[in-house]
Image (cartoon, rainbow, N blue to C red):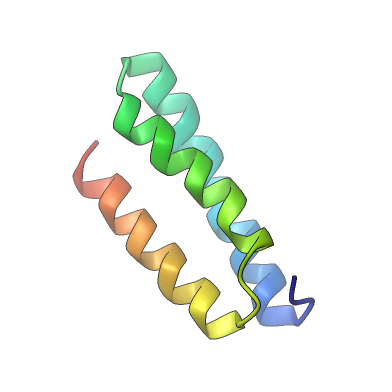
Length: 68
């Protein structure tokens, strides 16, 4: 896990988005939103690069946003 300021900011931002999509998916019965929400919550723990954390987070967010 990377503890740079950029990686921490990305983890917080995409973690909050993950909670939103997880709760919205559970409320609406949308399994895809729930899976992407959990993925947004967990992926920052396994990525070392801050740049890669931002890229993966943006891709997951766009996937969740357009499939909601």
